[in-house]
Length: 193
Image (tube, one colour):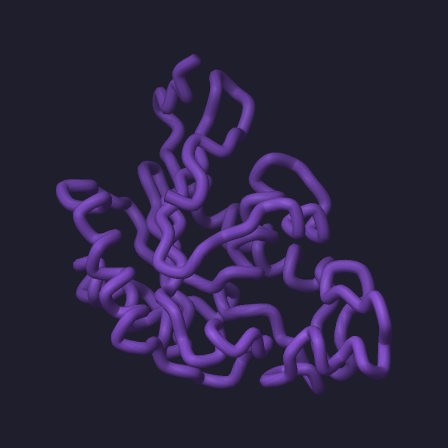
C-alpha cells in the first residue's frame, strides 16, 4: 500500500545521535548533554537518507545534541530553533536512571507515573501538537530534529494516539523516521530507519 503523499507533506523525524547519558541510561531531558563521537558517526550515516530532499520547514530543538544533528545532516543553515521540540522535562529525574528511580518507586515508568517537578506525558503531547500544527500548515515536507521520548510522543499524536502511547514506539539514536499519509489518514510510513 502506498502512503499516497499527494498534496500533503511528509514529516521527517531525526533523532540526535548517542550521548554519554544514552549509554548510561540516564534520563537526559533539559540537561545539555553533547553527542559522543559515535553519536556524530550515527548521524553522519543517516545524512544520505535526507540528501536531495526539499523541506518547506526545518525545525530543531535548541539543545546542542539536536542542533548539532541538524548541522550534520546538512540542514543547519535552514533550521529554526524550536523550544517545543525540546526533550521531555524530566524535572528531578533529569540525569537519573530508571533503575535508581525504582529503588524508591518500584515499577515506575515515565509514561505512566510522570516525574516530580517536570512535565507529564500530556504536557509533552501539547507541545507536540503545536509542532504538528505548524508542520501541517507548512505547505510541503517538514524536517524535525529532536529527542527520543519527545519524537515517540509526537509520532503517537500524529496517528491520533494518546501521548503515553509513545511508549510503544522504540526509537534509536541517529534514526530517521517518516510520518505521512495513506489517503486522508495520518500514518507512520517508516520508523527507526
